[in-house]
Image (cartoon, rainbow, N blue to C red; front, side, top):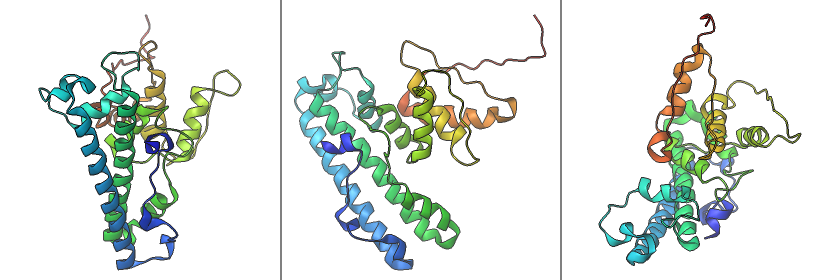
Length: 245
């Protein structure tokens, strides 16, 4: 499906509508219609995947019914290299990826509904959600780990963290890169995990150096909910500079 490649699926109810002009009940109904659309699309894609898996040859034990299929076990298959025998076919990968993309859009719609119900106290959050079209500057096909990161942490990566992460992963000059960002741009919660996920590629180990004052925050951000779906091993080492050999 093109949804996996483009990272988007436009809701018909949103076409030609300027939601910034909607208020109160109208805005809430608008986002509920969008949420309903993405929920139906996710269920339709999930049904298509299940139908394909009826043939045990498609995904081995997962298709035979001997192994319980969950969101986690299904989405993790996006991380398998195409060279592995257990890797899904290109068409199945597209279906699973499309389901993942739709999940992020469904989560965004659910957040918008929640912000509408909470009223003016969440106006800023609503504006930020509306401005973030999602998957801008990156493709879920090229970064399936980032897609799983979005789903697991119930967020949609903004363009600024993506641009910074890409420049640090592949610096334009080919040398080490140092970036400066304002507070609240997602340095700890988004950019560092994206870098760690991208640089830890089964051959290289990704090391993150954290100040003691930020350790607890980073530990929660990087070792919390994301592990269930992404399933990467991490090791913690304390470095005390005032101790001499």
